[in-house]
Image 1: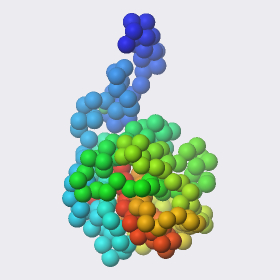
Image 2: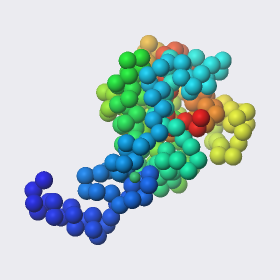
Image 3: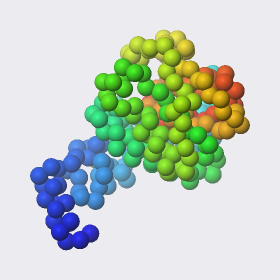
Image 4: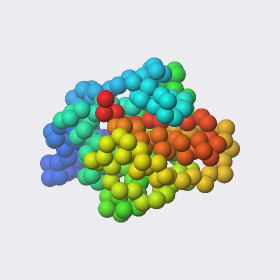
Length: 231
Ligand SMILES: [Zn+2]
């Protein structure tokens, strides 16, 4: 880095410090969103290395999937929870992209995970996109696609009926709430493989509904990937 640029960057860091999204420590110039310590300390699931992982088994008897993976374990008060909170509610769309890129790298490096033809983000409702300014799943999907050399297709899946918030609903109520929540008007070659991308999997109801909608459209090769799983 040229001397002037380096001094300018250091000055900027001093005047406008950036903070780690996982532990809130001040970031060094070379760090982006997450400090090096937290990067090495992330609670990785390593689900990409075995097909019958706990997340894949969550969907047994519910919807047929090719593969399922999540990057992180989501625990109360854990780093994953803080990161998801920042990218979902604090406007950190760049962080969503960075985490999506990490998820995409795990998929690309996996020997069992098929790199999909298309990446489809879980659609956000119009009201949430209006209030947050973006759909965090779109940014995660863009990161996954860039890392795995695939393509994002937001046109394959859209929200249908408006959905009430799911945060405080139980598993069955969530399923009923999202059952008719998505529509697909895809006129695509159904041989293409699709990876649906979400931020956090809790009951799996949203991803189940998305996968069903695409399957009803004729797509049979569907996988899912999320940044975190609440085991
Ligand atoms: Zn940190």
